[in-house]
Image (cartoon, rainbow, N blue to C red; front, side, top):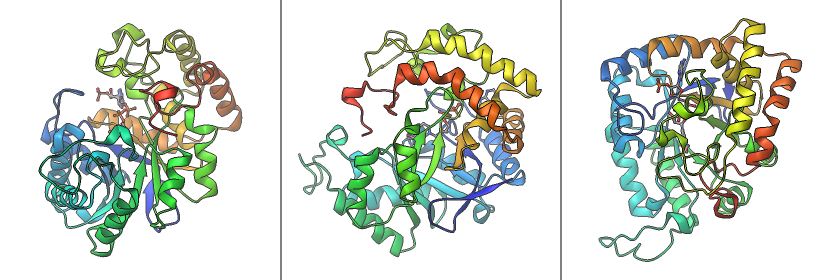
Length: 349
Ligand SMILES: NC(=O)c1ccc[n+]([C@@H]2O[C@H](COP(=O)([O-])OP(=O)(O)OC[C@H]3O[C@@H](n4cnc5c(N)ncnc54)[C@H](OP(=O)(O)O)[C@@H]3O)[C@@H](O)[C@H]2O)c1
């Protein structure tokens, strides 16, 4: 499978990566057996996937734990990316979070350690058992110095960030601690990063990891209509705010536009004789600025199909048509890449 350089490092990641949020089971995605995870991880490695994306928050650490079990005796074949919570971006908490992730992953190094969301007022949480952090916002400089220290100690190989906009990347850059990549939402229905963030990443040699490449199942053809999407997965701005459970935004969504686009995307898939999933994933990786996309593949059948996308080369005309078909969704949702918050409250800027 094609490998691409992540940022300016010598880390070569497979264009299709593995999203591990589902591992360990949990309320968001439902049950996931360890046997299946062991099989898929082994199979993924055999098929050339080397990047595995998890986070401490996924299923309360169970995703990391499950990945750690599945990678036992295969650790060196994998590049593990995991993330810590911005609410823990205080020196002692970062160190603790890193130790905990290392333990759960059963490894003594993390390849890519990412700040899951930017540090700003939304991330403040009040701890009472640590004098250093009561009622204060985490300090970005201190946080990145701590990460750099973990890097020097060999506990992490590279520092990364996720869900950062241009200003937030600049803020991180001003710490003078290099970061390798920015993990961002990217798929045919979530193209907000195209306008400013992607060009800025390219200009500054920041690698991009695309997440949610199938828009949590919307681009898989598994829903006959949007009403079938579970409330948990319908809280993004693609849906009317009344549709989702725990919705943060107050927008009316782009359901009409998505409903119109889906059969047109399917038509192109039919013309090419491929599955809509292959087409959707291939579109995301057709952009060379994207180093890898992490799809949540949790059965062998899903994985086998998703992997085919890595071998599907789309010509410019097809890419152009897909861009045009999905433009009304882009126009409706705009360039705010926070798909859970209205622009004025966007956590990515
Ligand atoms: N950095 C961040 O803030 C962030 C945020 C979200 C996600 N992520 C990363 O991105 C990864 C992927 O995102 P995601 O899982 O939310 O969304 P996704 O990959 O866009 O979509 C997952 C959905 O697609 C379905 N699916 C996948 N392959 C399929 C196939 N071949 N056939 C039919 N259905 C298929 C899954 O079905 P089943 O439910 O049947 O398995 C699931 O419903 C996560 O695992 C995580 O690593 C990062």
